[in-house]
Image 1 (cartoon, helix red, strand yellow):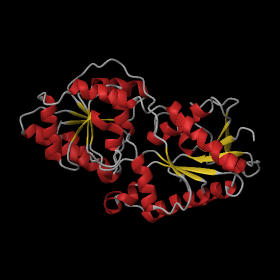
Image 2 (cartoon, rainbow, N blue to C red):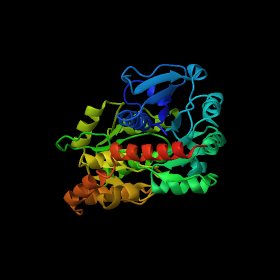
Image 3 (tube, one colour):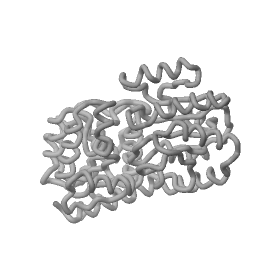
Image 4 (cartoon, one colour):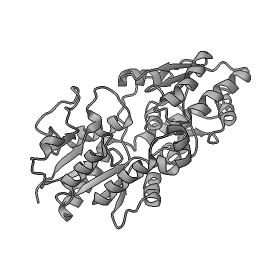
Length: 362
């Protein structure tokens, strides 16, 4: 058999710039795969962002055009939790277009709404039954499933009916170029602001530090919080302990990581934990909770605190400041651990899986 064309669900690549981890992941997969394979990006009837350059190996089509195209010689890769951030009809369309014609591989980054169902209802709202339904629909249509950590693979098998389909662990890669450390006076968090990210724990820990006679300063970086968090974060900013920065480009992100005393990542559930791996690559100390994938990704490179315990987090930061930890060793452990996560290796495994399901057929 020849080399398969990779059909990549690329809805997250329709907006320019750094959007979130899903965009960064999908773009990295696209770029690395296109070095050796033809990749056709499928978008929801709008073009790819202008910063995605098309060439002989990177092509683009829309759902409307896809209706008239022959897709019989390839593999369909759904990299965004197996679901699209568009209407249910479109999700079913993309599955029905490929179902029975070419193998489908669904990538599931986390199962947070299933693991943290009650918290998700309380803080994020929305119809979580729909999330579960769309992911299960992707699994049902797929020849193979990818989880981005061993923890995620275990959760997929726990919360979904995978039948006899293989569920393969393929780590995300780290695509960041460190600069020399120039440490300033701030702690740092970057990432999402959803219920599970622990922003409340983080801000309360800053207040504890202030009450302990310290002078904490926290930089929050990322897309602005959803409305149900906005007021809370605004109040934290008003205290003067916290500064918020909107989304920045990669060069500015690296500069800010290089200046941070430590990255604090208080999430109670992660599928992988990209910000932690990126900070370790930049030789920035990391403070995390030993939950979900965090011990798997950070290993012996992190300072661990009790989940959702702001007092314990504050104490760990005091210990960090007072030299209790062997920080140089933690930093070197983290740097070498981060080298395990490369897009070159991840995409090699993706392509190996694509070829396996392609050669096996439906």
